[in-house]
Structure formats: structure tokens, C-alpha cells
Image (cartoon, rainbow, N blue to C red; front, side, top):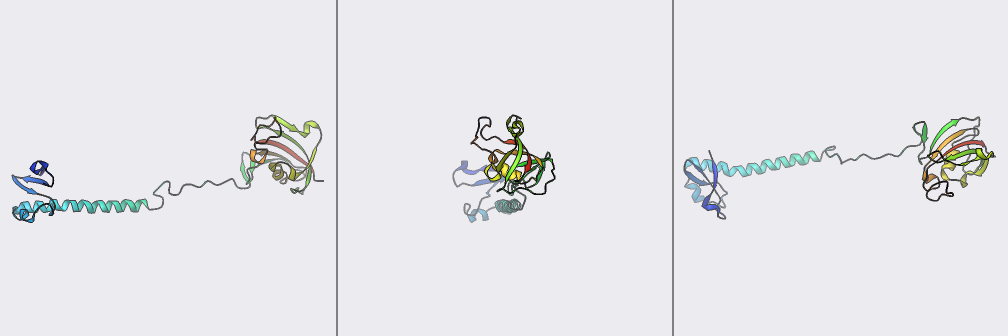
Amino acid sequence: MLYGVTEGGGSAGSGVAYCRGGTHFRAVSSSLTPESHFRKLPAHAKSIAVNFMLIPRILVVTGASLCLLGCSKSSQPGSDANANPPVATPASSGDQTNGMTTTASGLQYQVLKHGTGTVSPKATDTVTVHYEGRLLNGTVFDSSIARGQPASFPLNQVIPGWTEGVQLMKVGDKFKFVIPANLAYGPNSPTPAIPPNSPLVFEVELISIP
């Protein structure tokens, strides 16, 4: 059995001495142990000393091999969960959820009734419609139906959600629109009935394109 002990009370540069059966020798590098000391050792002690001196080299080589193996693994694709973070994709035009179709802008619409018309309005057209506008909580803030009078206006002079949505319709169609705040009034509400940055819900029937 080999036991490590500190020679000379552990003084600096004294090295480590090992003993076996009462025989003492130093198992340290040649820079710290004179060759003359090594030559005086018995044959079996020299063999043991050489083995001990090889241990640091073996450990260094083994450690280097493990390091390279680890580095190689970490550089392989898929080894790092964050190497290729998933990329988020926006809703594409025509994406359908819960009966609603979402356009690339975020406008949502649902066809409530198909008419007999074959022509859709352009942004520069003036249209005549019946409509009802509500907040998400169901509160009605405007309704041509309640007034009993259709409304006419140029499509390029209304909120962006209307400009985009009504162009998807044909005469006689009735659509439901859910318009996000950025396509509605945003922070600049024209009336206290519509809180700032409110999404709006409209049911719109396209009566004519004069």
C-alpha cells in the first residue's frame, strides 16, 4: 500500500515522499529531484517512482482528450437547446380560427351572408352600407340600422380596418369584422363611447357601389 506524506514537514520545494516497506523516495519531476537521488534508489523503488512520474502526464492527456470530446459534442447541431431558437411566424393571409379568417394585417372577418353581387369595391370607391359597431363587451356605440338610414362614404376616408375589410365584400354580402386597435382608432378615439386602443367589432352589409 502506498501512502503520500510530506517530507521535511511540508517545507516549500521539498516535494512529496512516498514510503513502502520503510524505503523512502521522491515521486516528483526531475526539476525538483536531482538525478543522483534517483540513481541511489533500489530497483523496485525506481520502477514505482517512474510509474508515479507518469501519472501526471497520463492525467493531462486524458483530460485533454475529454475536453476535445466535449467541445466536439457541443459544436454539433442541436446540442445546444438555444442554438437555433424557434422563430415566430405571423398569421398568413387567410388563416382561419374559430370561424374567423385573419388577414396578414391582423384584421379578422367572417362571412355571415353571401349576396348576389360579383364586384368588389376599390379603396377609391364610395360605398353604401348598413352597419353596427360594438366594443368587445358587446356595447353598441354606433348603428346605421338603429337610425334606419344606410351610410355612404369613400372607402379611403374611413379607418384602415374598414378600408381593407369592405374591399373583400361583394354587393349583398354581410360580414362580421373584428378590427384590432391599430387598424381602428388606436389611442385617438373620436368619442367617449370608444375607449382608447379598443378593438372594434362591426357587422357590415354592402348595399351598393354607386
